[in-house]
View 1 (spheres, rainbow, N blue to C red):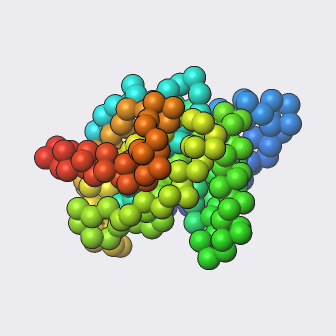
View 2: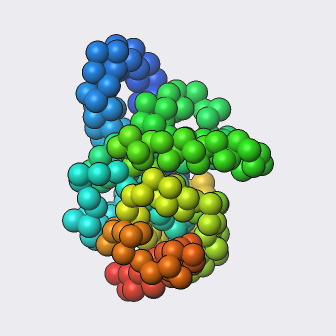
Length: 244
């Protein structure tokens, strides 16, 4: 329980201290948006790394060399828990926006950082609004901002189970014409969700798979892109189980 208290205290303190930083970042953005983007990313990545240390998370990263650094990508990952975001975002090499559920937009201060990092909020109860979010994500990728999405739509609560991937999530990559990076998470739920509200030490595996270039796929695979990527992640998940 002590880890939870310390971690929550740091997060709250970070958000409060961020208030004057928001103004500084806003001013920077008026003169140079690229500098603002890079500085915002660096600050949030630093905060996530501190959260990992305070939470006792040991992360092993595999395949970081697979991530292109010269263009935006769409990261597709299985969703096990809150620390999926913390561990993955700590290591993305370029500006990346997460697609998060609409409810998170109600969290004060946190939503400001998320907007600075070009995150998008998805209203799963409104099909029209959801489509607009996907269109915004496509524009983001075309403008050089990578997008991270969990196509299961919610976290999988059963051990060793990956929920079906929604096809709509893949329209971002197909319409933007960018590579897909499969991201496989092992054991992130062991940090918090498996024994909520306690935070416990855990060894987490995050593997960034080889980029999937859509133009290199055959027509049948393109038609069934969601199950194809899901199978890649599933295979990687069970391969990495022995590393935990």
